[in-house]
Amino acid sequence: MRGEAALLARFASLIETFATPNLGVLGTIMATVGAGPDAVDIKKAGTFPIVHGVRTLAIEKGIFETPTAARIEALVRAGVLEPAFGRELTSALHVFMEFRLRSQIQALHKGAMETESILRLDGITTVERDILRDALRVVRQFRDLIRSRYHLGAF
Image (cartoon, rainbow, N blue to C red; front, side):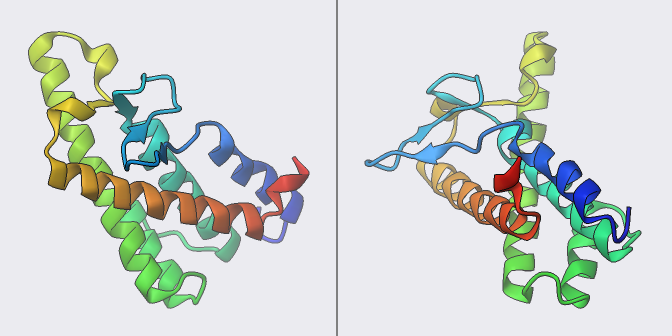
């Protein structure tokens, strides 16, 4: 797909499949990914847009590193991402991975694996909520970067 701008744009457009939650006026998180106002689907809201957007950029630049954190580092080395933003993106990915792991463990204990990627906001501390809020901000910035780079407004 290298050099195939239209195919890359179509591939990149999948980041629009799920919305990233917005912050309310009082700083509360309102989930817009079908999990309800007091929960966030970590996979849909955070992990997927990062992994898929990074995968798209890596394909465009011919970068074969895996996993996603290594791809981000390679994209920084290639000049596709600014170093500071690359660090923020990697940190956000790690935040989502930790929250998802906790959700998976809770779902396993409850015997409700269908909720394995759902983070209940009432089950996290104020500090964790701030960390989540910042990670979601990074995802929104990254989605904007992908939208702009691949002209996703055309789809």
